[in-house]
Picture 1 (cartoon, rainbow, N blue to C red):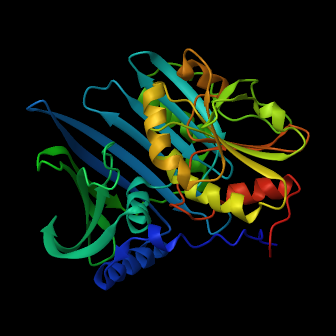
Picture 2 (picture 1 turned 90 degrees about the vertical axis):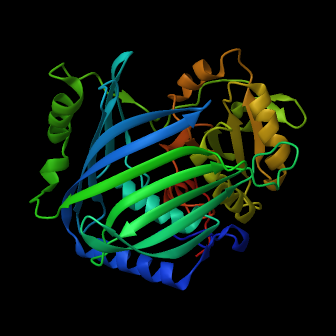
Picture 3 (picture 1 turned 180 degrees about the horizontal axis):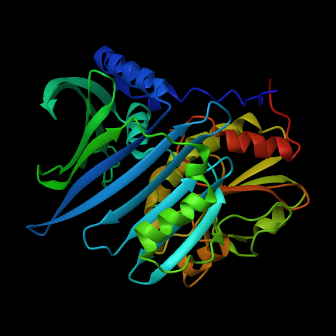
Length: 400
């Protein structure tokens, strides 16, 4: 039986982007093409430029992605990333239940494992999907030739509002352009961010090459395959590190920390809420996907207002000023409980929550963890099926 919902499937009318009919037609073509492909590998060459203080810094990265449609409860996805300097690389793999990740940087080699979630899916599809849910408007911008073929160009525009003196003022414009072939494949993505002054601050160009003839099987996404990827693409022959578990086990309790409530300034601990079903999100003002989850979080809170379910969002912002600035501008939009960790080093404290943002922790009435999971990639205001499953496991009644 499918999980019953909270009745939150549609985003608020105010948060929906304006989408032109021509752009929607291209979106439908991409959706149909995606559904028709069982498996492929793709190579993505990315060039990004950051303009700052009158200078430009360019960085190159190459990504290889593999994808297999399982025709069952899961889709398989694996990727390896590396930049030209070789200072940072990632290999991740999703099977039926688990995401695995290994990375190497100047501090050494580390690895993690966490439950699979919808956020871990092919990067360029994810960007395209989010453009139609999170942008201010999406439009068709004509045809351009790329790679010897004529492509439809879909343009997604975001108007940024970050001025502290006037929250409604547009401070920057970000434009993402998707080049879609006649076959419905995304061939190229460009991104540009322009400040209000007209000065460009960021530029990104991704060029995608597909191999749809790859004969992939679920074994290509197994732990053994992941370890081969990691050794070859990331570790340069070094042994695999121990993969650190990024979420808590069912029946665990959260670390006992003190948070400072907003706006009353009163200290509280999550354990004070024992006897209620509690949903905790860890976040920070700089974390995009943390804040993307808030509308979904708020809708769930409203739908369950009569069931003694408490929603809490606890910040691990390093700078108190960053936290307070965001809260003054946006906290009034939400009715759940906010707080900031009361610690000299919030980032160190966050490691006790396994160090990832956003993190979500659903506690039963006994104070024990019913479910914990990481990341959010469902679009503003859309239902998160992991939350529905966790609430049901905690004994919360959901409408049918």
